[in-house]
Image 1 (tube, one colour):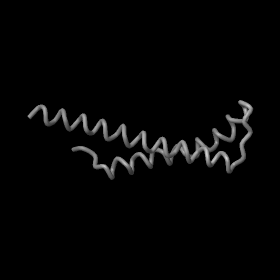
Image 2 (cartoon, rainbow, N blue to C red):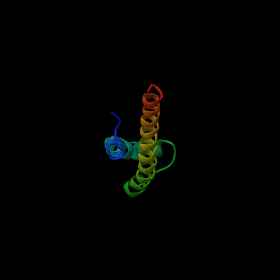
Image 3 (tube, one colour):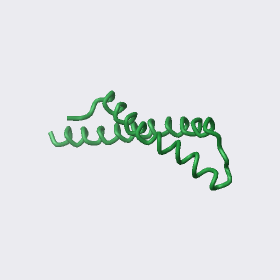
Image 4 (cartoon, rainbow, N blue to C red):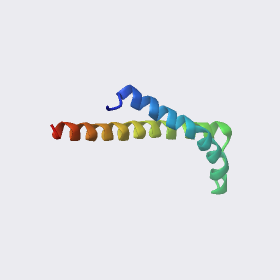
Length: 77
C-alpha cells in the first residue's frame, strides 16, 4: 500500500526535525572554522532556509518513489 501525501509530508517533517539540532550545532561550530563567524540568530536563519529545502526534497523524493512503485503495480496488471 502506498503512503499518502499527508503521510509523506509528516515523514519528511519528522526526518527534518530530527536533523534540526544537528544543523544548528553544525552551523555554530563549522562555519566559524571556515572563517564565517555566526550568531545564534544567523545560525537559526541559515537552518530555516536549509530546512525548507530539505522538506521539499524529502517530500519530492518520497512521492517520486511512491509514483514509481504504483506504476509498477499497474503495469503488472
